[in-house]
Each structure stands twice: as structure tokens, then as C-alpha cells.
Length: 89
Image 1 (cartoon, rainbow, N blue to C red):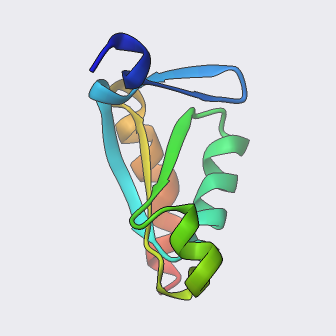
Image 2 (cartoon, rainbow, N blue to C red):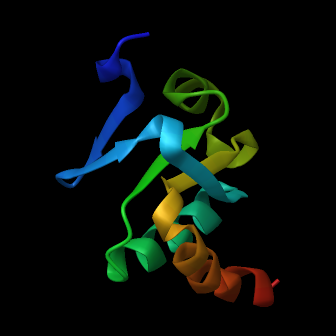
């Protein structure tokens, strides 16, 4: 794997995947809420799905699991912000 495979771009923000940490996993609706919270607090993130877009196109996103990663230095702040989602359950 070369260095380009380790990079992800989101709204002109660069995240090194090797240094990213998981801060959220959940269904599509919850992931959209988490993304909104991170974006409104200017925390760069990468979102990945368990099965990928092809699966979602064929089966729908009801069965899909989404994962959100942030840079290591943003982890604590992101987790604090995302506790709002856990408290609402």
C-alpha cells in the first residue's frame, strides 16, 4: 500500500487513515447525526460503511453499519460531542 492509499479527503481536510481512531458506529440515520455534530464543530472525519455502496444499492441501508473515524488528536473532543447521541438512546 502506498501513501496515497492511506489518505482520505473530506471537504478539503486531509486525514491519515493510519492515525485515525473509531469514535462512532451505527445505522445511517445515527451516522448522519454524528456527521452533522462533527462538521458543526469543525472536526475532520472519515465515514466508512461495513459492506460498501454496492450493498446499499442492492439491499438498502437498513442493514448497513457505518463507522466514523477522526484524527487521534481530535478523539477526546469528538467523543465528548458524540455523547449526546448515546444519551438520547
